Image (tube, rainbow, N blue to C red; front, side):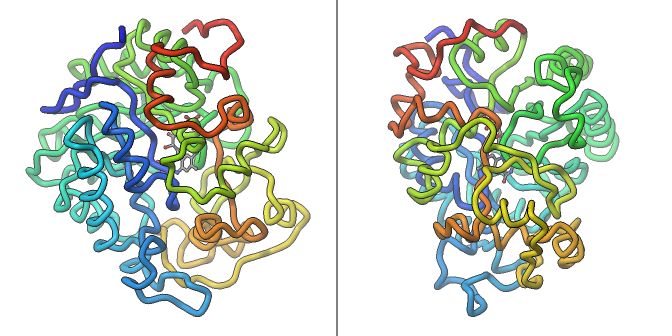
Length: 376
Ligand SMILES: Cc1cc2nc3c(=O)[nH]c(=O)nc-3n(C[C@H](O)[C@H](O)[C@H](O)COP(=O)(O)O)c2cc1C
């Protein structure tokens, strides 16, 4: 293995790959634990954890957790972190992905730290107050950004208010799964592609004493990882490839939808979070595109920018309800997220995390790779 280890605060992780957090329920304890066991970073998604143990939370007649306290359940998250750590046998690291946009953001950061998370990853907005909630806990703080400007603002704010800098930063380009930190049209523009954003973010990170830069969004193979690391990245964050693994927490139908998706089936939708959302065109998305409004009232109070359902009503769906439905395996009503490269998963098939990590570190051939190496 010729990739450098990844240093995150006091922890050195042998394999510089972070498995990206995937909500609702796509990366919970089984996937995160299995990834960490291989010596990489497994990440649990902290959104909608109330879906994991229906008996632990108050729900309405459709099974939706009621209010933010049950939607982002402390008990469920605590179990997941502890179980992921058990599965990992103390190897790698266990992170928690907490969107800045969720209601009770500060409380969930504290819940994750109390339960033993090694790092907190936060995007979908700028996590300007993250160090305040983390206090003096020995936990790595890793914001997600989409520009050098955003990194500069986070560093200036954290240094001034908290005398602290990020332990690493994730630069996420517009080929990633889920929410994009760009306007719709920017997602297709050359200047906003990951390889073109990377030099300025690396330069900014170096100006702050060499904050490790981790790249994400469409990074696919060992050759991509090697190219970015040779150009100065400290590691990569990858999500979509991990969906096609036996250990991924998603239901079988979720995996099948991605394995059957063609390139043109993966599209960007308007989301109540306020950013474009990359999803697979499944029946609910088709109906939405045809003008249907599937909003059924706000029960979960899941994210603050939605303004208790106001934005959901405008875009025609509640994000918690639809991602929750996908986790429950409801093909007709769910929304199924994928990265732009999801259509390549059919060449991978469903494999074990151990095998995928071997492919990504160049130890075994990768059946999905035919094209020439990426140049950065
Ligand atoms: C199914 C799915 C759900 C995701 N959910 C989240 C999330 O809850 N929070 C977040 O910050 N990123 C989320 N992401 C983004 C990933 O963490 C990751 O950064 C991104 O997908 C990387 O690009 P890739 O999928 O091309 O590897 C999600 C991605 C996928 C595919």
